[in-house]
Image (cartoon, rainbow, N blue to C red; front, side):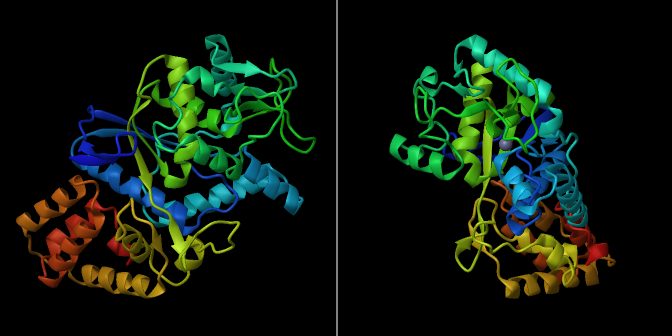
Length: 382
Ligand SMILES: [Zn+2]
């Protein structure tokens, strides 16, 4: 089996241990679940199912980022409690995940509940001398202490990093920083934001350290596969590497880094700020979840793609054709093997789906049922 590893920037053999430790960055519960989220978690569902098919046990951790700038700003603008918004949005998200028949994670830690572990991680980084306390409630990671490690994942040069850091919620121009790219580990809370007591003043954690602490708490200091959307590579995942390796003194923090492509609409990346989100809940009113899942899987996980209603209609016809023959007998073992080969080749779901269409066309009901099961597509819901 082979997977593309972002850090090594190529497709490499996957040789996981019997238990594969998988961490996937979860949602910030304020605009879940748009198709971009659904695409990422459907891709990792396909990976988990393939690994389980190959005899691995998968320990799957996916967090909930319920303490971060985006959700706190959304709550402020709406004049509502961030806790209520988070609970509602997570409920919606989990309902969409269940409809899409996504294998639930084994653990789903919430950042707000992981604050003691996050504080231990920050204290550890200060002790290691790779973080500093500004003295006004802010604690930063000291990127210069990490030498040239920043950029190992994204391959970005410093100039580009500076631009992206500012665009993605960083504070390059904040005073008293040793380097503009130093990122917040702890910060004072605004009066209407949640705050926890700490040795550095009452406040809240930075986003990046939340994921490092939750991943290490649940999976240990070195994990097998770390995943997320490609927009998280810099600075979020670069920061996770520095923090986790800074704490354990071991590397690499993740043996394989897998990143999903961006979903778009009319050529623009789907995002709240672009106001072009397509929500799974809205699609569910018109389409069977099996059709939505098939539609998502027909894009390779690393591909950037644009929502196309005609293609979703075609996916709907395709799963209907599968459901029509799924009760019949008939196997084609060679075609089943081709399906597995495709998935083992960097999770080539488009090819695997094409084999399934071919099996349905040939009336091989048993193989269609098996193949849909391998991809976690519930034909009862087609
Ligand atoms: Zn994360």
